[in-house]
Image (tube, one colour):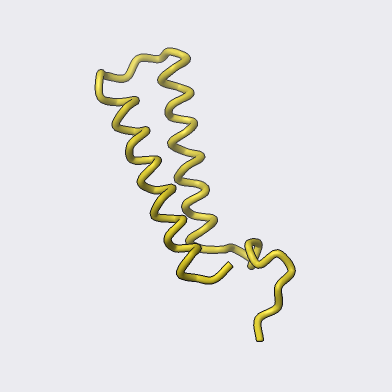
Length: 67
């Protein structure tokens, strides 16, 4: 996966996490199943954004060698 596409996908995941955080926190945070699940979705979105942006250890290369 080329760098430009990875960064574009990272921006999309960051936007997803921002929208989910707004939805979860818009009406106040209560320790309920829906808010906890929403925060888990935010953390997963941010985690995926990091993986796509940083590509640690070349894990998104999927066996492709760079010329």
